[in-house]
Image 1: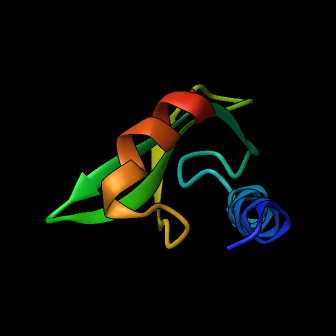
Image 2: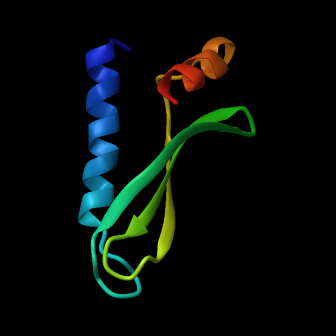
Length: 80
């Protein structure tokens, strides 16, 4: 994937977060932390969020097809 494709992919993740209301009060989630993790060898973007109104915490998990197994940790360090 090119960097432009990667950015579009991550942008779409934030669209999902922005369109998901808080399950407690209906408020908007704000992203606090983005991390890349491997689950059974499959890379995922994990975005920890908090509701701007009530403080409810929620993690969103998205597959990360742009992370290759051999350089996944190096990419994760660059993004953090």
